Image 1 (cartoon, one colour):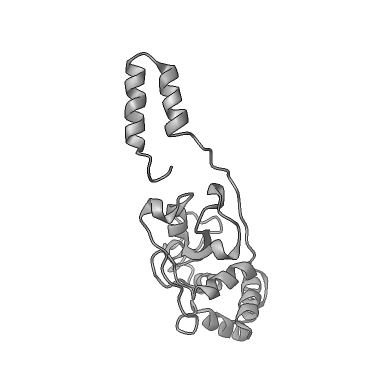
Image 2: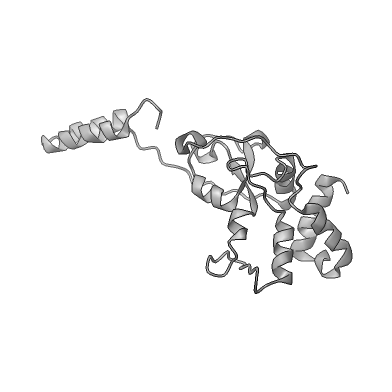
Length: 192
């Protein structure tokens, strides 16, 4: 919906047309003044390397809230070491997953949603938390009254990525699977 359209006014006129027994007029008002535009369900999947490139560029800052975010490997490692105090569930079940995974786990969001005509390109991708990404959904930041905050400085905050990489050198179990994939992505992007 464009900023010039007042949806409540349009629906008021639609309801008046219905009250006057004119469904065709109500239909015409909606079609002309507040048309339905279906949102495409466009799934996106990014590799850990692609994610890490965006996270590093943005300095592990949630570009909508300004909060520091944590490298995914670090969150999972803490969960592996302290499973009772910091549980993680592979399907992200809210009753089985520490809330930090929602508020501190970085993810990629499209500033202008792809389903709304935004490009799936690096300049349209920003780092945000899982919770902010879910809240934003298919809306623009203007529609939500949010703003895009400046990127952080990776030299000031790296999301505890370098801590994780130090752990990889100490702990052999981190050289396989999930930990290896994220570790390789971090090493590639940080050039370590």
